[in-house]
Image 1 (cartoon, rainbow, N blue to C red):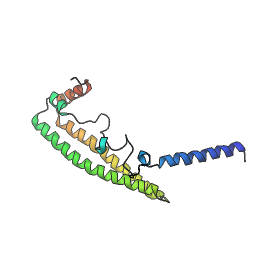
Image 2 (image 1 turned 90 degrees about the vertical axis):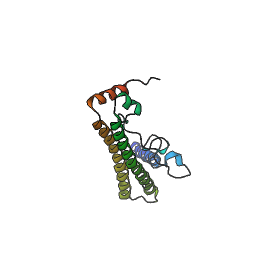
Image 3 (image 1 turned 180 degrees about the horizontal axis):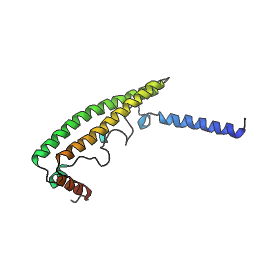
Image 4 (image 1 turned 135 degrees about the horizontal axis):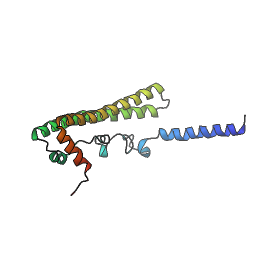
Length: 164
């Protein structure tokens, strides 16, 4: 066999071993306490709270609502929507953390079953998708409560830089 081809094959194999190990390494650099969820910047929000909403889907702040002229009745409905949203997402986040623990356990087993790994990955993906849909669903539900003029004011207040 050609020596260059053998060297190339060895290089590829070494890369797979090194990168493959990194891909299955424990998040957080192998913390002794076990799997603590996804690495920073992935999945959960700050201090284990709910994941950050997708870009552009942040719910309006009370100050934004005030500037837009949202009525008390609308604010009460928005608060109810947000409460329902938080209750659903708290459950989803708990399920997601458990699914990520399950995935980690399957991957770290002595002889990982590819079908079990794929099923665990699918479960994690499904839960992340449901969380994303919940965030966007809340945004759309809030927007549906507002008049076109209020939505326009909200967009303007969000685009304007914060002043003290």
